[in-house]
Length: 145
Image 1 (cartoon, helix red, strand yellow):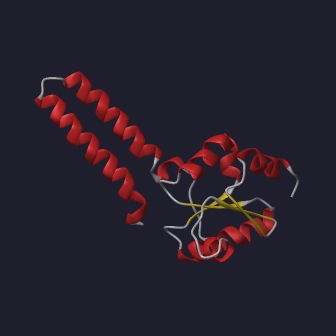
Image 2 (image 1 turned 180 degrees about the vertical axis):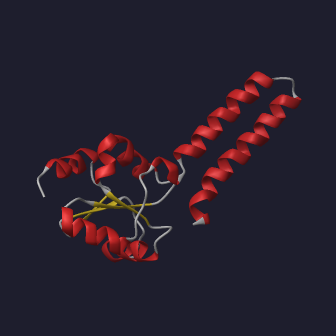
Image 3 (image 1 turned 30 degrees about the vertical axis):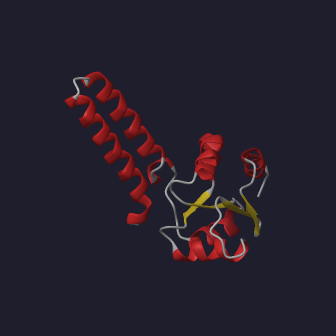
């Protein structure tokens, strides 16, 4: 779980150091702007931007019942963030599995990607798709289950 927060913490620490240097140099306005930018970067790269993750087994069970896609992702992944942003409100209709929090999810991703933890990996109707176009994922959500 801590692994998911390493990058956001690094962003905040770096922003704080740069802001402290700016304040000591007599530029408090610049320091505030820098700190705000780094905090926003930390937020975007944190698990907070994504809907609540479930375990891989639970996601598969739910997907079998409702037919919705399962998205395997990890914090700090720009392609995962792109998918999340492009899905908009519809992102809540997908079952999200954070592979850094769920070893079974990481194993499932490695199994379909030649041993690599390539994300996002989207599973629709039992078929995996690595880094699919967000428009395609939206189409899958529009299909009846």
